[in-house]
Amino acid sequence: MRLVILLIKPLLLLSLLAVSGCDLDARHTSGVERIKDRKTLRVGTLYHPLSYFLRDGQEEGLDFELAQQFAHSLGEDITLSMVPAYSLSELFTLLDNGTVDMLAAGLTSTEQRRKQYRFGPSYYHIEHTLAYRNGLSRPKNPEEIQGDILVLAGSSQAEWLHTLQQELPELHWEVRRDTDAEDLLRQVAEGKADYTLVSDLLLARTQRYYPNVQAAFTLGDPQPVAWMLPNSSDDSMLASMLDFFNQQYDSGNLAHLHEKYFGHVQSFDYVDTRTFLQRIDKLLPQYRPLFERHAGELDWRLLAAMSYQESHWDPEATSYTGVRGMMMLTEDTAAQVGVKNRLDPEQSIRGGAQYLTSLIERLPESIPDGERIWFALAAYNIGLGHVLDVRRLTQTRQQDPNSWAQVKANLPLLHQPQWYKQTRYGYARGRETKQFVNNIRQYYQSLLWQDNAQTDASLAAQHDPLSTEPDIY
Image 1 (cartoon, rainbow, N blue to C red):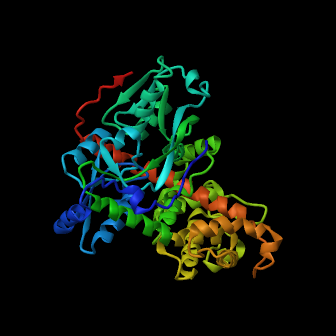
Image 2 (cartoon, one colour):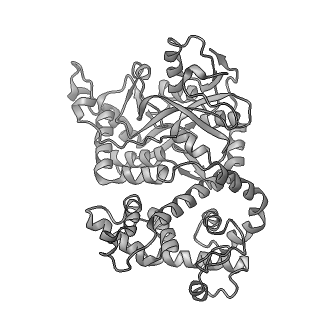
Image 3 (tube, rainbow, N blue to C red):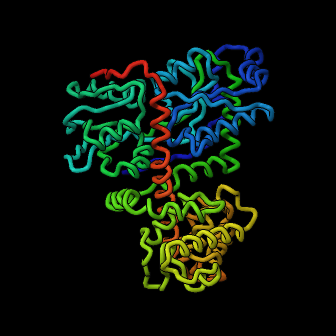
């Protein structure tokens, strides 16, 4: 599967605003001023692993973080109110009836939607991807599809199928209401549906939970994702959005958020994921109390993900380099953190957590809090000295040494003599460290999903859907 994440600086203001004969001065600030008078920016969104979700009761997500910063850009006293919906139809109704000021939910700017709504600048792109269940025949193009496709009502995928049906009148699909794309992928995984059409990014993330769902092919060109406004809105909000995203681009914050939410999405390994999910059920329950007990300031699930990457939760694991145990400690590190028996699960987990915490504390203060854990994990694998070397190389290349995305990209330089000769600590296996951190992030996301699945199901059960009947085409 080819992941497409395009980071493109917004165009000039005149290319975005369509004033067409209106008196700009008369209406330029009215929309923004209403928000300032109210002191609240109301944003409609969807419960979605990229846009908006709750983790341990805290709001997170790419759109949430951007909307929070956008609200602050409109005025320091403006607060953000996220209004989550459970379906696209419910979401669009929030905007149509004025319940919210805008939508931030990973929505693509399509030709049909632009006839009814206004869109801000794009902040990433997605590709429509046909997903099918592993073990079945993989269609290579739309002509080879044998069965029905599930799509969400009102989605850009449904729009695309309507267009495609003009060329393939025999194409059939079912439109589902009051559900989400992740649930459609679950139905494919469980054999309750033949195919679904979703974004490539969502599929890549969801494969960590449903490893038997595969990508068949992509349809069309990459589609821009943008915030949505009512068609009746004045130009003040569009102008503010454009200025905001230009600042996000120039400051590097947009790239930072892309790294945070997309940076660990990588090539999918079916066997590894299946094994990991099986061990969550069989092995993790006996070690979870130890991870929780010794995590300290760390998230126990991150500690568990790190331990799985190191040892696959095998207390007697040993590598050819002599590191041993659940957290694969060296003899020196074990002595440093007071571990006498590296093969004892509790001692190993306690020692690994203590050592990782010490690495976080020893990192330069200039590294942002949200980035420090990835630098620390790299240091756990390759050594703090090599991580500091890569930061210096990153700065030498006129890049940001405090950005994990940019430092991560430069880790492979430690394999190349022309670069590692310039460093204090020399050669190191930087490519392996890059993979090490990415793997932990993937395992961590899977554990978060497993841990929050019951909460999400409970929230959905409390919602009274308007309709669950599919429309068949």
